[in-house]
Length: 438
Ligand SMILES: Nc1ncnc2c1ncn2[C@@H]1O[C@H](COP(=O)(O)OP(=O)(O)OP(=O)(O)O)[C@@H](O)[C@H]1O
Ligand SMILES: [Mg+2]
Image 1 (cartoon, rainbow, N blue to C red):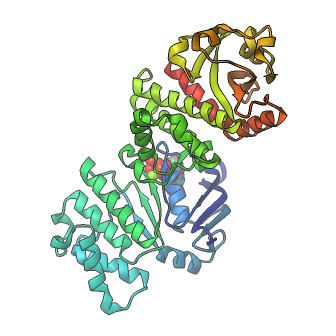
Image 2: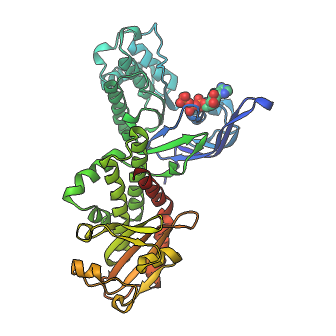
Image 3: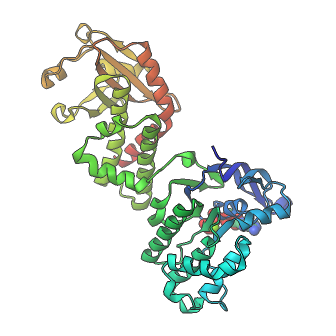
């Protein structure tokens, strides 16, 4: 595989000296593949611009490793930094166009700076790029005669005209209204896709998050645990899920995903939920609840698929009771609350141990009422406690009847632990949010 154009590891960065020294970035690590669009979000002062300038060789790295386009920037010579910079298109919040020059001349400067093309090609390439960003009619206008959005598009044309390997953009839409902001990023995306440009983009603008292949979040100089989460087509995915709710049960959808895709899906839902909570503060909103519910349903069906169980359900621990949250026939069963310690799920919650039962009707803890209500015949059961990082049980997954007619075995238990380890933290976050939304 070709090496990633951006690979940052163990990056620390401080401003100031002596007593005034203040560390801004802490052990930052991020790897970005060729052609990937990654958005950096995070509160003001969290270090986003600092990180961008380090990646862009505009500032010297102090500690760690910053490999950009095949060059290590830590302790690099000025000539190396210069060489890397020439391969990068920069777009800043202030467009930095030269006021005395026309749009065309500004863009031509971008080509000249790259040193990549013979002189006689400059004008034509610049015109083509201005056409591409929809400014073909305005190439001779000076910046003062252009709107904010148009100026920003000139800046984008200037950044992309030399087909740079990489584009670094800091708040490119901050000064634009909704529509031109959208247009600008769509054009960036289109042009980048055509040229395989890697894009790292800092933004506070929630409206453009969906153009990202991935979103990383910087807070107090640290990339949070979600940073490596792949959020491919985030918004698209949520829309698809929402659209699909009637057409295709989430469970079926989930069956078609492999482990990685599934983990990504769950991560998407979690992140989307968090964002939703942050931006709307409508914790009781129905849409929000339904997103969380879909996450729980997805988890439960995936588990049933993994262990080849006919039926699956999920209880959440609520104080000293278990609440049935997901079941194949929840509507028929109605609300079920059982005290922790009673029944099979209750016993699993109490002891924190997995319980396997080969013949349900021979076990005194088994409650036959549910079978009576639903007409289903339970044979074997596996009841699996799900623990948080502190080791407390916060949910119990219960699966019924292995499809091959055999009872659940130690292999099933092992498969469950593996699965839960791979998604445990994400799942916990989901449930934490579910609590917040209740
Ligand atoms: N040249 C500098 N010298 C000293 N401190 C600096 C310098 N540049 C930035 N800082 C400080 O470093 C911290 C991070 O700044 P940075 O510009 O990276 O944040 P940011 O995440 O881009 O914020 P914003 O969203 O407001 O642009 C801030 O506390 C800032 O005051
Ligand atoms: Mg900034």
